[in-house]
Length: 286
Image (cartoon, helix red, strand yellow):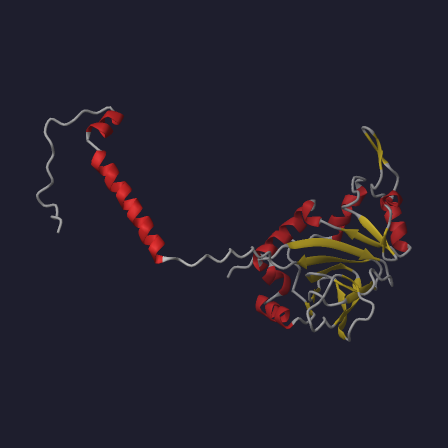
């Protein structure tokens, strides 16, 4: 099979699928990240233009989304002003205070992220979305929580400490905060270029280490399953025979009323001067 991006992102895809089957977290270290992975400069560069606004940029502080009015000064519009446009200086100030920067829905406005998620969706046969998270040194993003999707964490800059806990044995990994997680399954620190796999439903938390830490979260959701067709009722042989008899009787009646003048009249032709007989070499009917 020819892969779109999975082999370049994780190495041997077979080992990744085995990891998924076991439901265990794991760190992958490819020789280099695929060119489709956007750089941090590319993602945050949009903030400098002054046109980035919620819901494409958010900040989370102590588990709560920062009100859009705090992202920066309101921008002028044709019918007044609109709040929620991101001021880079204000964003950095909030980050220094401990807030987490979130750039959701990357595939909708960043070409690289769009290409990456499209190729990954093609490889896995599942819907894939991209998010970017950034925190400052020693700051922790969200508290222990779990997601309703498998997640590939691609570290873009800095280093981040991760703790991934055992997923529930019954597979009940409802998204949201987890107050009493099970035992840790993996404690690790990943650096730029590393890729961490977090199984669906496994509680986890992360905190930045060296300066600004940023990672790309690729969420891989379960493939949509079409609703099964309703079970057909039993086929009754008598009904099939009755329908076949009706069709044959109707066909015989139509054939008996046909003449050669009808089709010729519709095509603008005229009857032949001599009737054409059946070819002599045509097989005779039994």
